[in-house]
Structures are given as structure tokens and as C-alpha cells.
Length: 134
Image (tube, rainbow, N blue to C red; front, side, top):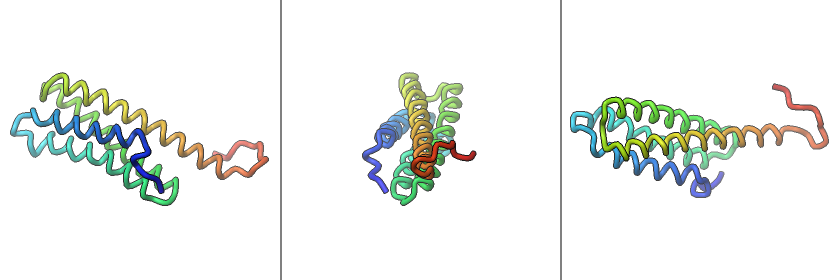
């Protein structure tokens, strides 16, 4: 287990959530239960999954929740594309959300790769020079 506040990606996910909430404030009222709701639920899912993964005991479970967080970020990226095509929200807020979402995706990807590599290395025996089986 670890403290999510120790992870930079978690802190950025909080900032992204705030940015999405501000961005979607300016969507048309008829989108309140559509794209606005989807984007808000999705962005909350990003940080929530990181936090839940931090509360798990094993590295494998942690990576599983990072994968779910990454998937939620992919959904948010798609929804942001739709919002852009429909010209919803303030353009500067839209660009900020797109930039932040991309950054979170890259950070999550790097963290998952690092955690998988450390798990692989932990399974290798000391002094064993053979590469792990794939």
C-alpha cells in the first residue's frame, strides 16, 4: 500500500478533474445529462482508480487499477474530441483539458511500465543472468 498523495500523477489527476468541471460548466444546458455528465464521471474515475490501486496490497493489483485509470483517461480524450468538434465550452479551457489528459495518459503509461518491470525484476533470482520468460 502507498499514499496516493506521494504520486505526481495522482496530484495531476486532481487538477485535471477541476479543469474538466470548469470546462463543462460552459456546455449547453441540454448536455447536462449527456457529455457533461460522462466527462465528469470519467475524470473522477481517473483519480479514484489511482487512489484505490494505492490502497491495494500487491503490485499486480495496483497496476490493474492504473490500467482502469488509463482507460478512463482514454475515454475522456475521446469525449474531449467530441466537445471540440461541437465547439462546446471555452476554447482555452478545452485546450487545457486536452493537454492535461494527454499528460496524465503518458504519466500513467510510464508508471505502469515501471511497475511491471519492477515486478519482473523481483521474480528473477539473484545471480540469474538469463532473461525472464515471456
